[in-house]
Length: 128
Ligand code: ZN
Picture 1 (cartoon, protein in one colour):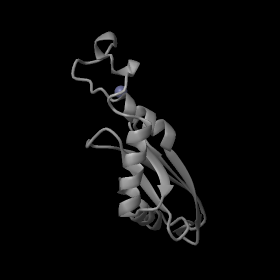
Picture 2 (spheres, rainbow, N blue to C red):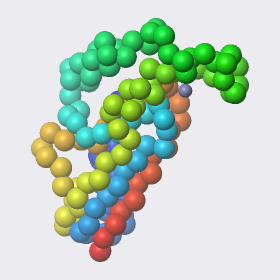
Picture 3 (cartoon, rainbow, N blue to C red):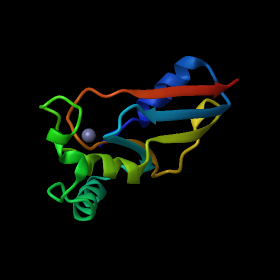
Picture 4 (cartoon, rainbow, N blue to C red):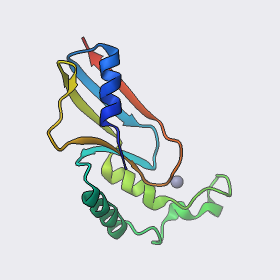
């Protein structure tokens, strides 16, 4: 999990936009993006929760690589897609006086569910 809050705040400051909102969107089907607390033990709880709920070694149709039209080295990652489905892929955060409007313990977290790989996140700032 990666805390993107500081980097996104830096981009907002560079943009010069003071009031409006920001959209943050993961551009992948096996990552997730959502607001939560960046706390070491909670992160371990989230990992354990997802592993209990969506075991990687369960039977998934998406993992029948030989039956799909895809490269033979395609990973068996159905559990990653399902976790991404649960956690979501985007957030909209208000922007006031040049700052993200987040609660004290809220961070914009990117969840790597099938990596590590190079990932892209789209950030768009709207306002004036
Ligand atoms: Zn897949």
